[in-house]
Image (cartoon, rainbow, N blue to C red; front, side):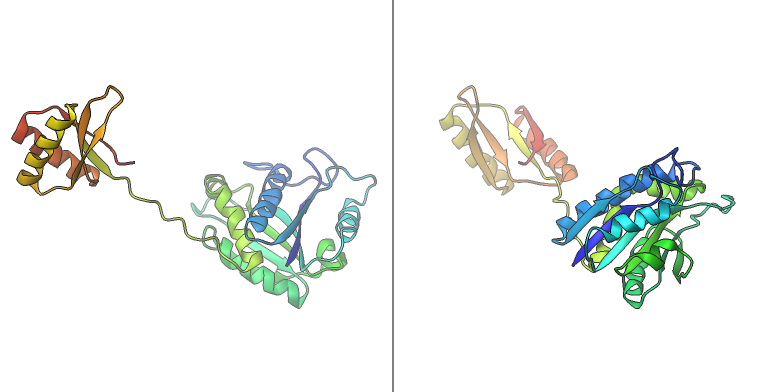
Length: 258
């Protein structure tokens, strides 16, 4: 699939610039749109980013659409926007909504709306006949209102989850999720002080007999050998370290098991 992602409105301060609240819509549109393109490409899809910072004439909406239509054919063309007009007193997000016109556009709108609803209040999707972008682009089109610039709750969620917001939009468009990242738990091991190789081997056998722990010896930078245990979670490693010191009186410490 091929996507065209356009930042809505002109650049901040120009004719046709966006809403301003806790954040500036024109600025945020120009952050979100290229990041969505980046994530679509990571998902293996063809995506293009465009923006119109300053119109040549008074009809910047037409100039935006003309620019989009000049780029060729796409499965969906998308404009990124932020909404405004909330009372900001309900202590929850006002939310996201997505607009479409064509049946093909509706499919993309539904998927993007569902994704964004995992972070923001779901304002649903709407069939909208009045938006110039939806009426005049030659390809199936949607318009995404990410959240409200004048709702502190929306802005807090958006700013704290910027990358996730962009990923969710990309996943909705692509109908494909990024693989879940499972963080590998950090393990810790016990490391003794240094001995000669022969003494280290002897002491390791002694410890193995006392504890049953898996161990090995390792040469250190100064030519001595330390005894290393296998990996434990931090609490167990600290407990076992105390046990080892009590049994032997040796110097020892814990370190990340790399």
